Image (cartoon, rainbow, N blue to C red; front, side, top):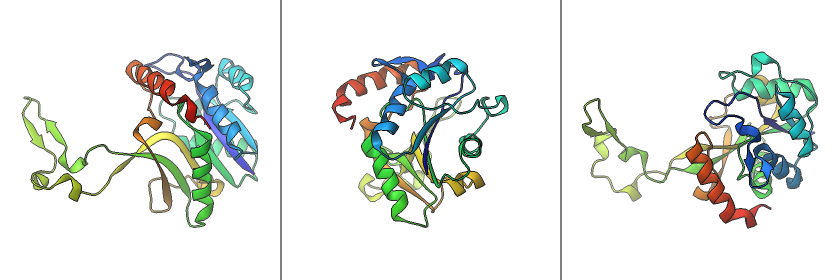
Length: 229
């Protein structure tokens, strides 16, 4: 069985009610539910939440809410590993593959989810496949300021290195994480040599933490709505 798990707890601080905030005609998590359902990848799409209001909206959007997430797994310090392990135990001990899709990942498309599944299945040695994006500039050329405002390089040895001679670097885009159920249950780390990347273009993901992030996501979504397939 293949399972989609969308973790959507209550209690967002910087954007109150973020997971169900209106976004282009749907509650925000509704876009993650829609992408999962339309991808054809999953036998079940569930939302893991501690909040009855979120659960009701999740069901309206087409997801299942077969359990209530315990309060001890719904605070600011609970990691995705614990949430995923709990969901797999609570829903079905026989699931073979599970994908964690973040509820604010409104730019997620069915196509990218299918690519992630294909990449996981293509290599039996892989535990996970996650979405990522390229750093727009080599991190070796990063600058920082001290307490007095003085500027210095993080890595002075690369002062004269051409940017094209530096390696590509990637960061977790916070969109989706495909994984083998055994790896989730064992809480194996994601960022290892046993993981693969689906590299998204810069306009394909926005990590929504602040009102500015939300405004940017709304603009990008409007420009790329034709790609929701």
